[in-house]
Image 1 (cartoon, rainbow, N blue to C red):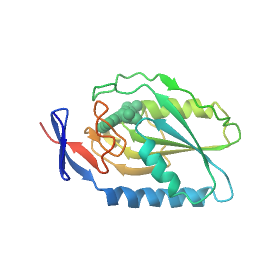
Image 2: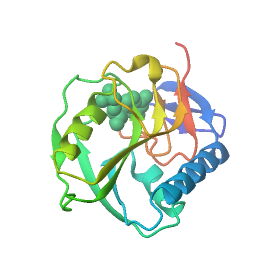
Image 3: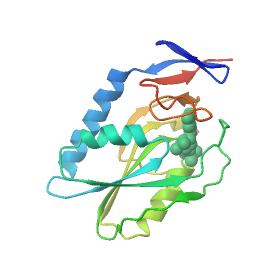
Image 4: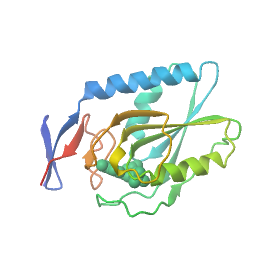
Length: 185
Ligand code: 5GP
């Protein structure tokens, strides 16, 4: 059973409440976009979005970054239909762009244990970019066991399951404009 109301939703029978509103997300995304614009003034960076979760954040972030830029995508194995990581990362879609000598901006939806982003940072660094900037919309700081230096973090959040604004629960909820957090059972 699933249904959506503005202040809470039920997804796959579980209840979530609003954690970040549309406006809070938009303001923070615009701020990061402006910072990236200043950081890469006179350059032409390439955004690499991590599918599927980052597609909405990435599209908003790019439109708030007021300089010429490019985009490509990479896809990793996901949580599947579960809410807990399998602890393994597999690549499902490769990057086609040549990243050698480029300013690369990696865009994640959420850093949880940090396993995915450290895997990606190692992989992209091996492609000899001029620079690598790590951006994530959300960071579950207390859950991160694979330490990695994040350059831009939208919001730090508690170690609880969230969905909306690109993030799913069992493929549901990506179209929600706000971010919702799971309520205590
Ligand atoms: P990590 O490798 O850092 O443990 O997990 C990163 C990936 O796990 C994210 O890109 C995302 O796909 C998924 N993930 C982690 N926490 C959540 C969450 O609270 N909600 C959703 N929908 N996905 C999550």
